[in-house]
Length: 467
Ligand SMILES: [Ca+2]
Ligand SMILES: [Ca+2]
Image (tube, rainbow, N blue to C red; front, side, top):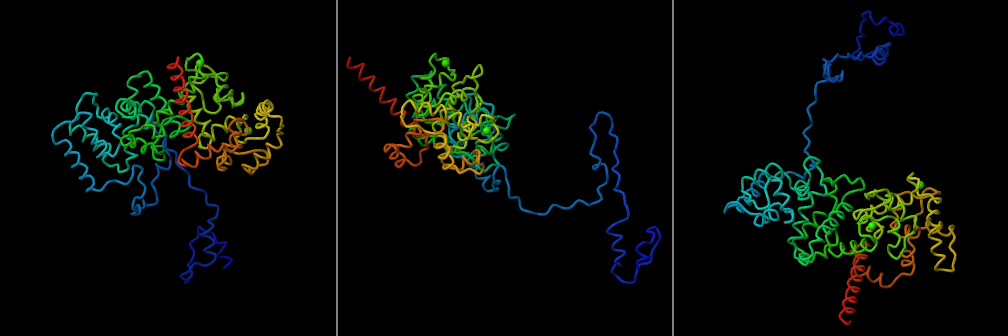
């Protein structure tokens, strides 16, 4: 047996009678003696073509396996419609066109009843079909577009994305929402009063579009993807526009009152009205409740990149991101916004030496209004109590997000007024939260401020009439 094991492998050997290999044979088969790995032949490609992978030039010794018959379960565009559903939709479309081509107003019923989209998307379809505003649409033109682009989609959010997206980028850009906004300003019953003030149309439209990009998109600001649309409530809010006559009841994106508050807040800070703010302009915001260092870092784009004409300046759009982040510190986006403001060395950890720099300015402010002294050690203990971080030296973004008290945490570091309001447990505020639990911090802020603006306008009016 031992001799067999060291036998020259070139010599033919007699196999044993046993149907099973001997231990020595087994050993040889498992460990072939110093067998070199096969050489990969490099095939010289003809000039002008890139080299091919050597593997693909060799004959594959393994026969190709047949793919197992597993039912497809992931459909990026939603499960496909059945033949019955396809036929039903085609019949529905044919019925709407039975009297010939339709104008834009007549076509809206197809957008809502067949495509299950907001009627305010009509103009996007119109331009996808290559039509001008005053053209009519024939059944042939629409069916060609519909069968090619929309027929296999059952998820209306996917349909919305396909109608709005920029075709070359496969994303929704700001300009792709423009026609929805123009139609909205022209037709929505809740915006009739704006007819007399065309100068505000573009600012209202810009504000709504920016709020959509702030809420649905992300900081990379590279357009809205299908997944972003799917995860968001944008489709639902657009659909609400056809049912809700008071646009102010649609808090997300479209409320005119919310726009009014954002615009007035900006106008109050922008003294020279060139629609640009710097850190100095920002400091009086909300009765100067933010510390200077925070205002400086906001204007320099540490929270989110700013688009002003020079470093340290913000546009109206940048201000929208700032004010929503400031007034609602609980959303994932605003938690990130303020984390970047405070994480001065950008290492992903909010360390106590960073927090202390901001706190020193906060402490100065406290000194001006209160004889009581607050030591950083106490603040540190309170912050640790709120978040309970894993590391000793600081906090991670995820920990602040998960804590559910990001607003308190941030306000304690840099917004004295807001922190004091929480500490005092303002009964009006508690009542407001109880009455409208569905409202976000932003919604509550916008509501209170709008009422305040409306009241002061009425007071002004009374003053002028009594004079
Ligand atoms: Ca300015
Ligand atoms: Ca840091």
